[in-house]
Each structure stands twice: as structure tokens, then as C-alpha cells.
Image (cartoon, one colour):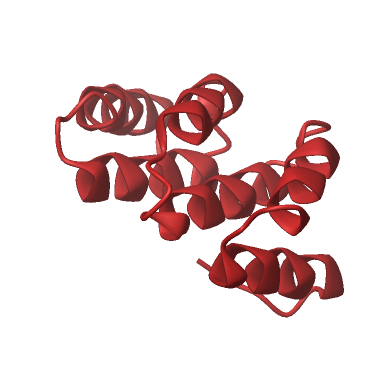
Length: 103
């Protein structure tokens, strides 16, 4: 896409990343990661910190986004996920390490 299109898309996605709905923020983070946005790590950190315990998919999405942008933060987040009480999150972290997980 043209630079202007990418910038416009990123601006829209950043607005969606501020939405009150967790699902909307999660999808915005995925799309920003696909664009290799420089905002991914900061948004991922916020989502990780604010994720309710009963929403493991929020943290699973953070892990995916960090992997997609090759973030150096991924290793520490994977360790946290592997130590989680959530079986879903632990399993996803193991699959991500093995290279067999997607969003």
C-alpha cells in the first residue's frame, strides 16, 4: 500500500486500540502488528497489564503480536505466560515457542 494509505490505516487502528471493548482493541493490535507499527510494544504492554484473569486470549494476542514484530520483550512475556494459572495461556505459549500457533 502507498505510504499515505498505510499512515491512514495506522491512525484508524490506533483510534480503535483505545476502544472500550477488549475485542476491538485485540483486533486493532493484531492489525497494527501486521503493519509492523512502532506502537505495537507499548499497546501490547498496556493490554498485558490490564488483561483480566478470565480473558486469557488478551494475553495470547499480545504474545502473537510481539512475536509478529520480533519484539525482544517476547521472551519475558512467554515466561510469564508459562507460569500463568491459565491452562489456555500456558498451552498457547508452548505452541508459540514451538512455532505452531497463530492469532
